[in-house]
Image (tube, rainbow, N blue to C red; front, side, top):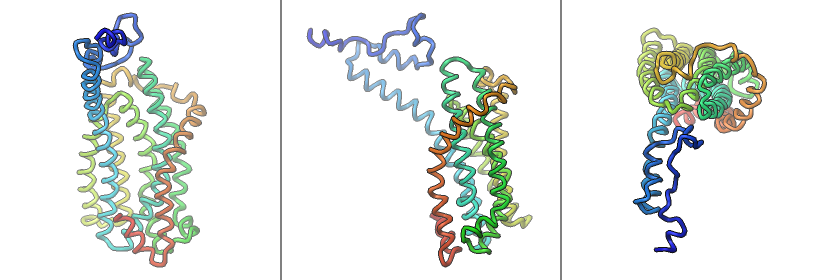
Length: 320
């Protein structure tokens, strides 16, 4: 027993906080600290109990975030399902537009917006709470500017698809769907910085609730657009864009109204317009890493459109 005590088995794994300790400035779970500092437990019991606490906290943070991305994907997928009921050409067109063109904007915006998570996390840990709102605004401005050249890709999507070898009928129908997705580009530009702003503060549940409610509204509006007003592919895409803007507005209203964001959101700030170039370089590096993951699937969709029967090929991939 003496030899075990000499090796510090009964010593606390984490020293108790003191007012002068740097740990006092960090938001560490008091329950976790008490567990690791409890010398009445063996080192294995402390590790096991602390691991269970960490897993529980991780689940509370990760589960809503997973639900958000899942529901957002289901929102886009539900639009394709509705389009599939209109005909094979409509399903192929929505698949080519939603997965072959829209993923370009999604990959770039998600990648560039992810840089906010790093900066906001650092600012939050350093107790520079007012900078979180500045970083979010700066990223939104930068992504809005980035969305302008992407918008022209959407506008000229039909000749670009034909240039890539897609059939004229599918390219024309896909372009019609793509035109309705133009507002979605700028919804992405606002949504991803807002999401990262909230996630850096461990605020994840509101986004999940908003995404769930928006999915219900989206399905209702898509049904009305296609079967009541007969707006076709363009109407289905517009409803999808509208749904993304509903998510953006609802999350921003939460930020403005919620007590948890009073210190991190202090209103619009002109500082957001400074340091855009440095922010762009950081965001671009993040975009390259994450965008490639989505572009691989985008390339697969574009190649499928070159097959002898592009409608069947694209329909198959949209189901897959």
